Length: 311
Image 1 (cartoon, helix red, strand yellow):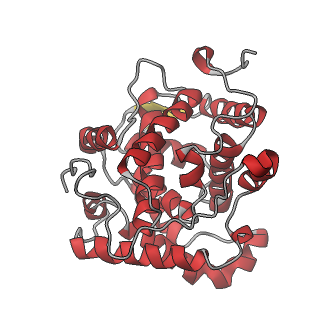
Image 2: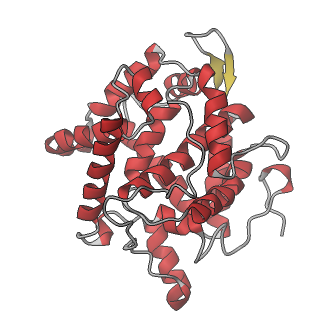
């Protein structure tokens, strides 16, 4: 049955976009996903048009927690949801995008959220961050499996509106090349600096006041996300791009993931994953991400590592 409201005549199977055994299920089940998501937000803020859209059309100043929740809900729905849940989540995003447009005060350039170039930037930084952080935190994902994850995720980019004739990075090599090409467009605008400041010390309103004692831990998590950025991105934010920072951040991410794997997974698993496991029953794999790269190993072996982007 055709899926009404989806672009370019796309369809989503009734059972959902992905399924047991997919690389997307594996990567998105990892407890490092939140850390990867925070890294993605820091990268996305470096694109002045993407940041202008958030600054002018988002309630992130008053409700940063709501924005994080909505992003997490979307990722969970399109990864583990039924076809109906995928269509609803995608339709909600596309409806919001229709009204997000304006002019970036920092560059004077017009923007619109459904611009294919901006959609690709948000997509690439998101899936790239999920994958990079999961591997650096210790999830044992081979180079071939990592490329399979990026290929699978192209479907999500198409559903939110990237036209079929616009390339979407579908491998680590393509992702590296895309980021290198896009870097000249990036800058730290005043809106980006404000967003980063609020990310480290988010405002607390209503029930969120109860989370005040956890703010130091949240600041530490944001600091780790910042340290996990590529060296060139850290330098743009005015921080050192030292290789020692990369190594230390990787070790800290591994320690955090190891600690999370020791607590009940209900503390960090999303509702869509829980429901997908129930729906598939015995056919669903055990997605407790116990597969861990050996201590001291890199996410990629020299044999399957993609070419390094300029640092």
